[in-house]
Image 1: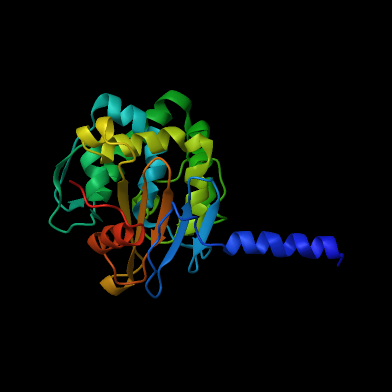
Image 2: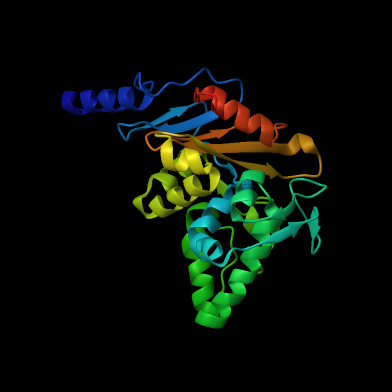
Length: 265
């Protein structure tokens, strides 16, 4: 190996492992936590095992937000979550009650997104046909599918696995962050900020933080569940994954603690 090449490798390795700049504060992680963040400088910083691929859980709703969020927002989608729907279970056993798009994002309501996604797919079939509808679905979810979707021309059934249940959709904190950082997701981030912030925060508070959780459970035991948390403030964008056995409230609390999000006033 040439001396120049060795120096370049050392420099790149040092940059990749470097802590965030002072204007991107991060508190120490707990055991099993993994964090990927992009600071105001646009560089990606990784902490813990942030490149490890894991079940994506209900962060899949961010992909659906990209796909159909504008349509759902314009038609004012509504759903009455009772905890079960067509054999599927929500993240809250007793249900969330009446949901709109903003509330379903805040509540992490799987059933709302499942119902709206199934309705959207019927619109696609009517407007585009089955082949184009499948292509639309695959194109959006391709970064998280790997080779787990069986080949074929037909549109797969849109069940809980497409909302993040089980192992069909997988991501790492790093992969999720890089997907969100892609300019193609600019409108997705704007929609997330608009739906997750209050009126005053969205319109008048500069650098207000929005946060959203995504839970995943690969078995019947709650100990197999883990939580993702994603958030940003217009300058910093971060994805945190918690170890098994943690829920939505813990995920959002840990995200705010790790990213040193100031309390709301």
